[in-house]
Amino acid sequence: MTALNQDQLSARAREILTGNDRGGYTVPNGRVYPFQWNWDSAFVALGFATFDLDRAWREVETLFEAQWPGGFVPHIVFWKDDPGYFPGPDVWASGRTPPTSGITQPPVAASVVRALWEADESAAFRPRLEALFPKLLAWHRWFHEVRDPLRTGVVVATHPWETGRDNSAEWDAPASAVDVSNVGEYQRRDTSHLDQSMRPTKLDYDRYLALVQFGRATGWDHRRIGQTNPFRVADVGMTMILLRANRDLLVLAQALGRTAEAAEIAGWLSLADKAGDYLWDEALGAYSSRDIITGRSCGALTSASFLNFYGGVGRPDRDRAMLAHAERIAGQVGRLMPSLDPADPRFEPLRYWRGPVWAVVNYLIGTGFALAGHADWAERVRRDTGELIAATGFHEAYNPLNSAPSGGDDFSWTAAIWLHWAGR
Ligand code: DGY
Picture 1: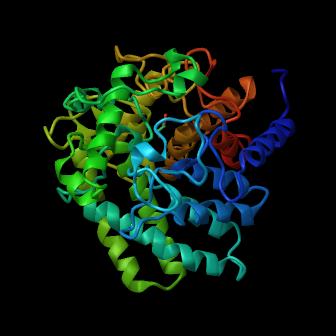
Picture 2 (picture 1 turned 30 degrees about the vertical axis):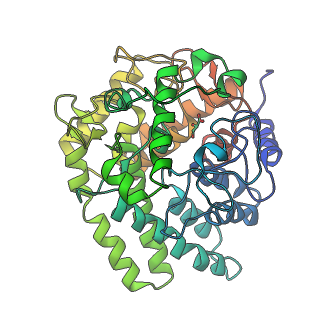
């Protein structure tokens, strides 16, 4: 790609968003991911907000049209069928209209809605906030009631796909308990669009499928899945994201004068320190996800480990340890933040969540650094993200060592993060 200047890159980013717009929702990438994805849509709304605020609200509203009665919001909404993706709606068999998957994804939506609201608090948008607020609250309540069985303030993921970091090294040990002997034959579609070396392995996919089959066999009974699923891991990423989302939802509750709801959210937030303690791995000297079945830490320092700042979970000694890790890693890569510590023997710079840099995670990390008063680190992560995009375009992810692209191109959330943050 010939080098584009800042304005040309922004124009290209807007083109990607409008090109991936399917009318009320945006696909992450037309070939590889041809449906509406939950947290992708939330980030996409931030991008639209820079040039079409009405369309930005619509993106989140469309996602919540697929919310289930108990508050659960699915990770994929299959508004239209598309043979280019596996597993499609018939594999999930959620029995819902529109068809959806049966698992959820990191709850960034409330934080995004706060940003949309603060971009324009006029009467034109207030009814939209009033309509979305109870839906966001119901989803957060679902997390606290169904996905925090130990009442430690964490989010327990029941599928690696829920975390968004599908093949992170964090899931290797917990997912080894998943029985894959009855998965049967299936045809992956991701590897017909993308190089295999950038994707999860066959063993990873067998486990993903076995977990879908387990959930489906319960009729997607989330309470039962929460108690009996063979994979139950307190995810540091989802936990920190929900903490931040609760802080933002509290601001929205106050803006709407919802006192009882504000008290309920404040109650959830009072568990923040407990969650931080539960996810701190003393041997690793870092935050890490933890298998709640075995009680063992996943023992991996990933980009999600740095979301403690974003979640507002802090203890001076632990903050110092995380900053020292950032310093060390910055000395080992060309651009931050690799999805796995390069010192980890499982590090692979091009394979999906085992090394590549993801613009959306950088945005969360950078925002967290800024909120915690580490402006220099916030700027470093923002600058690295902008440079990665400027070098080769709006890809799914990037090799942290040499900035080469990884995964799909013309990626909606990368375009959105450029417009909202990295390209400013
Ligand atoms: C995939 O299919 O790779 C997605 O990440 C699942 O959500």
